Length: 265
Ligand code: NAD
Image (cartoon, rainbow, N blue to C red; front, side, top):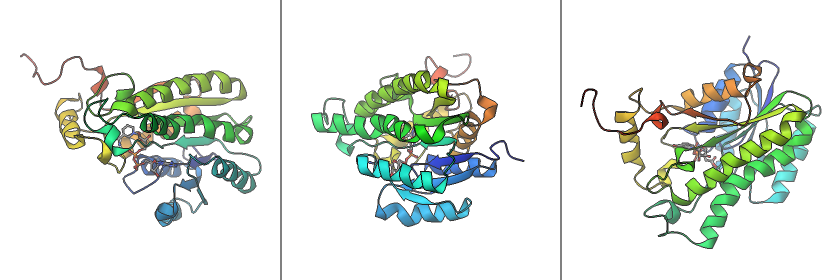
């Protein structure tokens, strides 16, 4: 029996087979969770429905997080599908206009780009937590989001997305504080770089992958399976004492002081 047997999970953020959310859904399905899904737009609907059919056949709901009405409709629909509630919310959503995540921090910076990155990548976690809250009461559930090292270190090209991820990680701590008494834990995984649709928008991403592969303690980049397994654990009762944390699934890259030197140099 899997360690998520009897749990119900809402998975957002699948855009392709390479999506981190897909790795999380696969691990949660393997561990026995019942899944429901969201898709951002009609273009992605059939892809998400295909993924859903391979992972237990749960429903897929439209969700563009910039539209409050869609957030309301999502939890209305989910409340009908799971009338006595659900246990796990996976938030795997981020966006910044391409010109804002290439070049220098100020090059693609506009009020609109800054607001959009924060709205879609940070505010949406709190908005979804607010919508999910009534359906997650008293079930020892968990909310999980995805962050990146650029939240706390200045990384070339990550720019406004790093600022939005800092807001996201702070939101994790505030949500953990306020939802803990209701039996809901809230955590983030800070994943190492993985080639996905979202990541391909980041300037110099191929170079980042190569650098991490050569320098991280495990000498490889992480996979969506690595992140999926950690996510399944953090959202399970095995992690019942963990909340408000940012857990690194990055092959140890974040612990490094200086990179590029070999042992003995
Ligand atoms: P992805 O492109 O597969 O997923 C990003 C998802 O965000 C897509 O499913 C897209 O539909 C969704 N999205 C964007 N705008 C949206 C909106 N307005 N409404 C609803 N959904 C919207 O890429 P991914 O790398 O799997 O990204 C998932 C999460 O992981 C993101 O938060 C990303 O920042 C984070 N992350 C990625 C990496 C990496 O290297 N790939 C590393 C650390 C963290």
